[in-house]
Length: 309
Image (cartoon, rainbow, N blue to C red; front, side, top):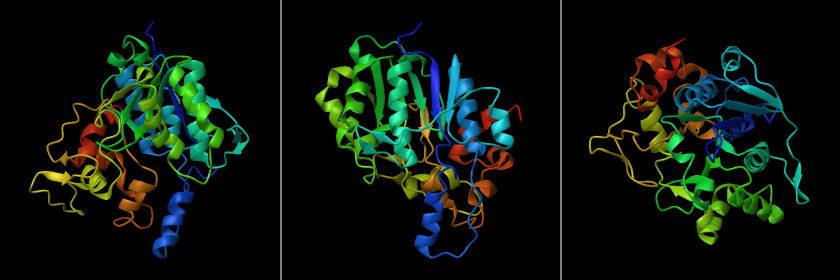
């Protein structure tokens, strides 16, 4: 058995509306008049998360934690690959309120990794190559693994994390929630682990920025990754550079260095695609037919996981 168990943990459905409040806020913020899309209980991206994890990593288990059970065609397809676990999210930590579903998920993922060990994935992560080489890194540094979020930025991505059961780093991290503020974004989720990694460098392995979280959530990155190659969104990258934000993203990116990719398909991608599909962007552009037949960078990576459909 490997030091880090080949068990995958995913958290989704902590909010009754499955997180669509972020999109509703965006629509109001820009003054658009439109019907809010129906809740996204489980779309094709969530299925690709499960199927890619299953195909690429051959895990012993995929544990899927939820408060509100998803439904629909893609959930039904995913059920044969996962072990669903209904949970009650925490509402406080060290006496501090934890009300936002994203912050509840931040706490749960650390608790699960401490208690069980394994591989944590956000529900919008696409696996690209096996985590196998990372499961038995020698020494204490191999007990916990994260990647940079951007090149030269003081952030570590918590969308993908690997941990030995009882590893020291996540315990230290969770212990720093004594000053948690539910109204503050990213501080405890991606900035604090960066600080702790500098404080305890022998307790964590930090991979390069392309390992888990590349491309980033910037509009230029998302436009190239999801829209370049489609006839409704012509993109000119004739100089070969998509963006220098958070590192150079070039048009010949191969993703050979990427074990997995965080797809940012909450607010970031939805806000990008509302420009083309204002009524129901996620369901109109994310279809099996489009993924199979349009050669966007994302589609070329994702389509192999739809071959049996």
